[in-house]
Amino acid sequence: MPLASVRRSNRLDLLQGTLDMLILRAVRSTPQHGYGISQAIRLHSADLLQVDTGSLYPAMHRLERQGWIRAEWKVSGNNQRVRVYQLTAAGRKHLAAARARWTQLSTAIAGILNRTGENEA
Image 1 (cartoon, rainbow, N blue to C red):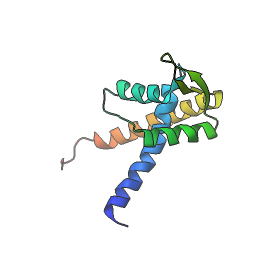
Image 2 (image 1 turned 60 degrees about the vertical axis):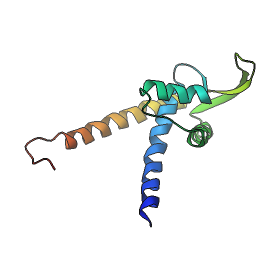
Image 3 (image 1 turned 180 degrees about the vertical axis):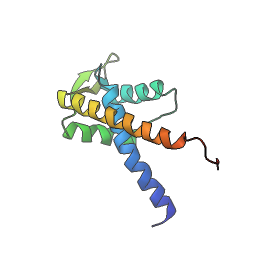
Image 4 (image 1 turned 60 degrees about the horizontal axis):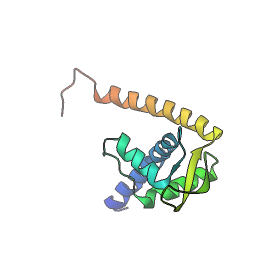
């Protein structure tokens, strides 16, 4: 498999699980439309994370199929029809579990990266 394909494959695996968690967090308190979700992720990451629509909408549809979010059509403030997503009870439970796994994983990685007493490469 070419290196570019391996990189793309690894990026998608990590991105999918992480993106799912970020979307669920974005709609936890307030129902949001897709653009609002994208902007919340960008804003709360200090502009480090920017999700393009080609990744965002398929992820939201997948989360809806899994029953973690639900969507309904509404009319926005500027009189456009938008699909608004909100967290379900199952989504709230999944988000709590995902956050616990994320905390455990990030602590484990930090433990490895922050080891002392070894020659730094």
